[in-house]
Image (cartoon, rainbow over all chains, first blue to last red):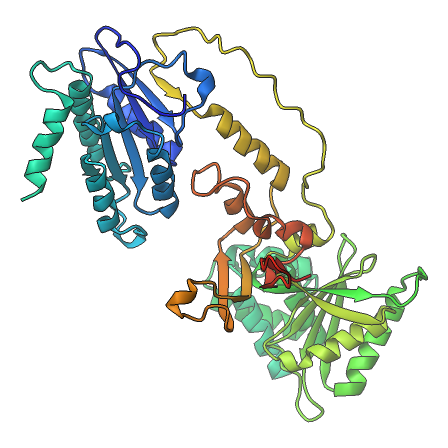
Length: 177
Length: 346
């Protein structure tokens, strides 16, 4: 199927699935490994993709995706274009808290080629949280992995009383003041 | 020994890194092994060069020998100079026997009759390359040894590699001498320039690994019966896309190392196309623009763009055609037809 839908498959017991979408595969791999190193009490599976739609041959093997993280490299206009075209292949109901934008490469200030305004506008349009990080530094990579892991836990429904939608609304109201 | 020659030899020796001086002097072959043994290569370079000049004084070195040392230095450090490629054309189809002595005689004749004061030095190397060093003077001034031009000619080919000195006015005379001496009737500069002489040779002699149109059948799509291994926690969704990019890269760039170029320059003489309502230069006059790609190793970096996720594969043909069109300077003009797309001038 061409469009990614959040609730079209049954969830698996005690597990969560994360999908990372971004054009730089090396940095995706590093982030995925950092996430796997974090302590957790559930099974996790991380899918890495360069763009959407995902290849349809693997559809029947793929589990339900709990959270999608779009990775944008602030040094590459190509990665922003890639994410923008991929967004069209995500069902609207995903954006109720199950999508996050991750901007990488912010440590290299003199190599920025994307305006932060443009990305903030993108995140606002899609009502999703926006995180900035520099994945080439191990400490920040570990911190980002922890944040994403906690968000994934909420999106997969492992935290009773907190849903993905309520969490994202919490994050928004702290941004908008 | 002439003072200017002594100074020139001294300065040339100073250019050489200290660890390589002994090897360079041996390759030069002017000082005997016994003389080289007397030199102390562990002192500061200033002193080494003074000692070398002293020994050359004993052997009565002249400008010829000093020029030979310069050729040796530039042959080893050829990548410090910027080389341009020239192509010569024959008028008929006769395959003449190349006589090196005749070539040298004619070459010298032309330059010396025009300028009187030139220093011309020849050296042949194993790979059939003839290196020519020319120091330019005028009928009234002695040649300037510090700004020589270098020519590398492979006699079995119509290609000449020239590293001109700053004095560009002597270039036409140099070209004239080359065609007369080698029995060609025309010489033209190719749009190909680089620091790496070997890479230029690789490109024009077609010695790099090219993409031949061999049929590589796509691997059969295996049934996706992958064992559901619970240990595989990182799954790459776009493996077939990665393989496609790899295949395309191999098609365009071949599998071997690429020739080393430092830049590709595109001069645009196309019209600026904008919304006509904006009234900004739309199709009124050419938008003069120069696009230059620079890199320590341009072709390798182009090859790694798509795998690194920085560009789409396949790359624009304007970039991938660089080795087999043997050029890195391009002029892009408007295509004169209804579709008005740009095309590359031949």
